[in-house]
Amino acid sequence: MIGKVFLVALAALAFAAPARAGLSLLDNGRIRVGVDLGQGGKLTWLSHSQGEHADNLLLGSEQSYYSGPYEPDYSPEWHGYQDPATVIEHSNDGHTLYDLAVWAGCECSMQTWITLRGNAAVVRNRLTNFRSDATQYAPGWQELPALYTVAPLYRIVTYDGSAPYRHAPTDDLTAQAAQFSFFTPRHIDMVASEHWEAAVDDNGFGVGLFEPNALRFIAIS
Image 1 (cartoon, rainbow, N blue to C red):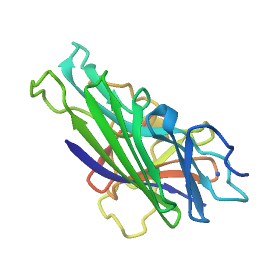
Image 2 (tube, rainbow, N blue to C red):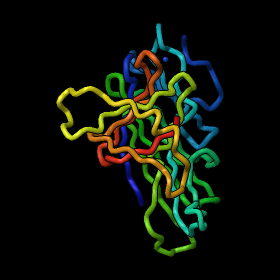
Image 3 (cartoon, helix red, strand yellow):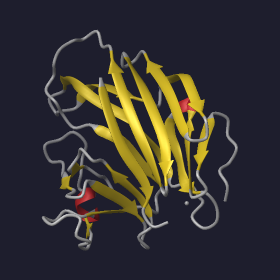
Image 4 (tube, helix red, strand yellow):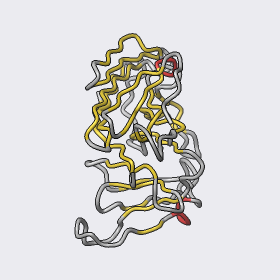
């Protein structure tokens, strides 16, 4: 069982969310988030509640896990993720959004809890794995979470220096991110000294991802 907490925030504070079957929304008057119950409960909407920047910034954000056996090029054969899963339990009381999804393809279930805090969505994930293959494979890279933004948010920024939390200038790592290739020895990972990275547009507006237990992030621009 794996439990992770991460923070998705508007990093510079994306007209109303469209009515869509299967979209469950939370809105605290500052930001709006939504999960698609037809896609395993993955997060598919993140924006301001209204006014400027009330357009959706996400293609999607979901739990995504990998494990062996591994191909010669390091590609993992097992992949558990929300998109093809079926939501079997869901609740939304206006403060906490919860869903439980299962997928026979990964022999696993995935739970998600989302609450809003200011201009941030606090997301807690849990994977319960009941694979018939009980082999203990070597650990590898994970997408915790897999976060995909809209095209204008193409710049990857973080702070990767040795003096975190001192209001130092951020670093633009877009050129490095553009060189990344999944699951190869040539990938480029970035040391995010303050445990966050962001995908932003030319004006510095976008989505930030904070993971308190992670220092090394991988991004593709």
